[in-house]
Image (tube, rainbow, N blue to C red; front, top):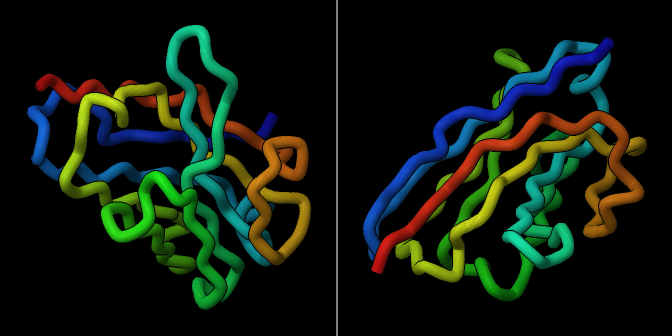
Length: 124
């Protein structure tokens, strides 16, 4: 079983920053795009950000563009999501996932290994 694990969530105030991390084993990380998604109660899982294997092709949801930055350290098999200027609307469980391919996509069905998620709560 492939274990993808997120960390770094927590309770912060509006305007604060937070960095999420996601570790994956080599067979779920090497050569694959990685993505971050989030889900709030009563809502569907939505795309946040993704990047390709080389970390050169990045894509963001419009709602986080300019505030969030996705990056990866292939040596550590870790992908990061640096979040700044957080708002209560960013409150959600954040999931990391490995894509089936090398190029990033925004569709959850294009990802096959998912972590259990980490809760991010932003108070006003």
